[in-house]
Amino acid sequence: MCLSTVYNHEKQEDNILCKYVANITVDGNNLIFEDVMGEKMTITGRLVSADLTAGSVIVAAE
Image 1 (cartoon, one colour):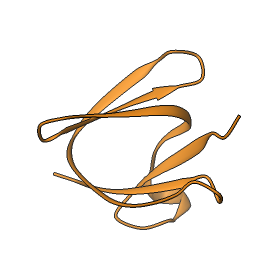
Image 2: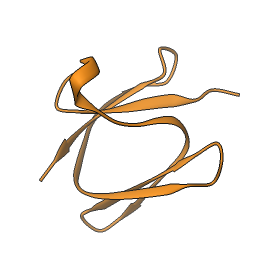
Image 3: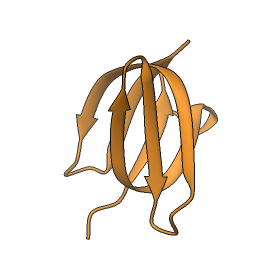
Image 4: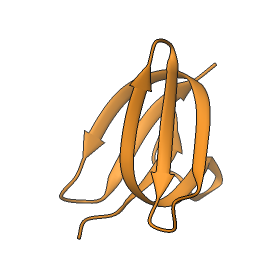
Protein backbone atom coordinates (compact mmCIF):
# COMPACT_ATOMS: atom_id res chain seq x y z
CA MET A 1 0.00 0.00 0.00
CA CYS A 2 1.35 3.43 -0.97
CA LEU A 3 0.49 6.27 1.36
CA SER A 4 1.32 9.92 0.77
CA THR A 5 1.95 13.11 2.69
CA VAL A 6 0.23 16.26 1.40
CA TYR A 7 2.17 19.54 1.48
CA ASN A 8 1.02 23.09 0.85
CA HIS A 9 3.12 24.79 -1.88
CA GLU A 10 6.41 22.94 -1.30
CA LYS A 11 7.77 19.83 0.34
CA GLN A 12 8.81 21.10 3.77
CA GLU A 13 7.96 19.81 7.24
CA ASP A 14 6.21 23.08 8.16
CA ASN A 15 3.88 22.77 5.13
CA ILE A 16 2.33 19.37 5.91
CA LEU A 17 -1.46 19.38 5.60
CA CYS A 18 -2.08 15.68 6.22
CA LYS A 19 -0.23 12.37 6.36
CA TYR A 20 -0.92 8.74 5.42
CA VAL A 21 -3.26 9.74 2.59
CA ALA A 22 -4.65 6.75 0.73
CA ASN A 23 -7.24 8.46 -1.50
CA ILE A 24 -7.60 11.84 -3.22
CA THR A 25 -10.89 13.05 -4.71
CA VAL A 26 -11.46 16.24 -6.70
CA ASP A 27 -14.82 17.99 -6.36
CA GLY A 28 -14.77 21.25 -8.32
CA ASN A 29 -12.23 23.51 -6.57
CA ASN A 30 -12.08 21.20 -3.54
CA LEU A 31 -9.53 18.47 -2.92
CA ILE A 32 -10.62 15.77 -0.50
CA PHE A 33 -7.89 13.70 1.14
CA GLU A 34 -8.75 10.49 2.97
CA ASP A 35 -6.16 8.90 5.21
CA VAL A 36 -5.67 5.22 5.93
CA MET A 37 -7.99 5.45 8.96
CA GLY A 38 -10.84 6.93 6.89
CA GLU A 39 -10.49 10.50 8.20
CA LYS A 40 -11.21 13.10 5.51
CA MET A 41 -9.76 16.57 5.05
CA THR A 42 -11.10 19.01 2.45
CA ILE A 43 -9.22 22.03 1.14
CA THR A 44 -9.96 24.55 -1.57
CA GLY A 45 -7.09 24.71 -4.02
CA ARG A 46 -5.41 22.88 -6.84
CA LEU A 47 -3.05 19.97 -7.29
CA VAL A 48 0.51 21.09 -8.14
CA SER A 49 2.27 17.72 -8.33
CA ALA A 50 2.11 14.14 -7.12
CA ASP A 51 5.13 11.87 -6.74
CA LEU A 52 3.50 8.64 -5.67
CA THR A 53 6.77 6.73 -5.65
CA ALA A 54 8.14 9.16 -3.06
CA GLY A 55 4.77 9.45 -1.32
CA SER A 56 4.44 13.22 -1.65
CA VAL A 57 1.64 15.36 -3.00
CA ILE A 58 1.97 19.12 -3.34
CA VAL A 59 -1.09 21.38 -3.51
CA ALA A 60 -1.70 25.10 -3.67
CA ALA A 61 -4.30 25.77 -0.99
CA GLU A 62 -6.31 28.99 -1.21
